[in-house]
Amino acid sequence: MIRRLVLLAAFAAGLGASAGAQTVPQFTVDAAWPKPLPHNWILGQVGGIFVDGNDHVWVFQRPRSLTDDERGATLTPPRSICCAPAPPVMEFDQAGNVVQAWGGPHAGYDWPASEHGIAVDSHGFVWLAGSGKGDGSILKFRRDGTFVMQIGHPGPIDSADTTHLGQPADMWIDEAAHEIYVADGYGNHRVVVFDSETGAFKRMWGAYGKPPRDDGPAKYDPSAPVSTSFANPVHCVRIARDGLVYVCDRINDRYQVFHKDGTFVREVRERPETLGNGSVWSMNFWPPKEQTYLLIADGENNEVRIVRRDNDTVVGHFGQSGRNAGEFHWVHVMAVDSHGNVYTGEVDNAKRVQRFRPN
Image 1: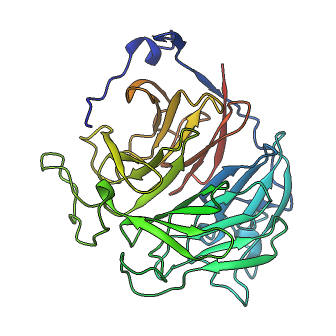
Image 2 (image 1 turned 90 degrees about the vertical axis):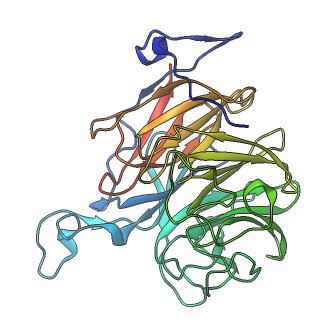
Image 3 (image 1 turned 120 degrees about the vertical axis):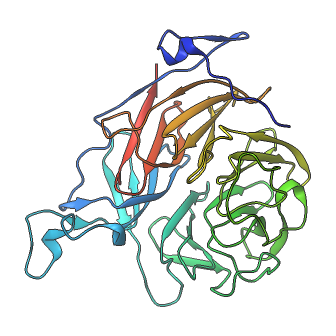
């Protein structure tokens, strides 16, 4: 299903709007969150963000994305008094304090070349993905950083291969079914599902629920017929409380919705005129229990859109391109806590996380 993008001018003007019986949510940036990092640390590009069952915010960031002037204190000799790269995996509490931080290359598993995608299940297991060249696995750790399991291994890009991943971008866990869904990814063109306890392959699908294909168009053309294949990257996967699976097809300016068995439900295009890096980067459901809305992070247009899930209509947005608090430069990933606070992470040279409180 394809629908025309609708924005309510009243919301854009900050006057609020009504959608049926619901009032369109509005958000205000919390510029005091997080607190200054300890140990002279600084964040790199934010590859993943997730809120666990304790409302702790987990950030998966890229220390190797820092420039020499940003990590000047660690050079030999030191270039400046600040700063040092923070560890890749960081856990924050609701107040914005760092609870713990860990991660990085180590014998026994293939640490990703580019940190991308994090999920934390109710048992405290932390799942990590990697989108860099040669990355072909997802990793499972205990909450304290103890390694547990690796699914997949580096290898050739092949969306039909069940033993290698292709630069996976994101994950979502179906705990009742003991399954982990992977948006795979920057190399492959599919959603793939594994057993979250054994790592065994379960199933996979491509665009429209068809077998995944690696022959998608090299470049998005808004005037051309919609692609029958996922583009790279297949950038996010989310499962709603009603069991529907939402998938970000970023460059193709759309998301597709499926049942858990891969049966195609519908397609929605988002700002289909968008070129560059596409208009659907990340998404989450709001409010946390009712999930009336789908929030969509758009890193090319640098906004978060608010979409009614029952009719796929855009009813508002927040953010714009810029570097002040509440603005975005390449808003990349997004999460929501139980209070309805929205957390975003940015890449390129923005390298920050922000929190937005519902009004």
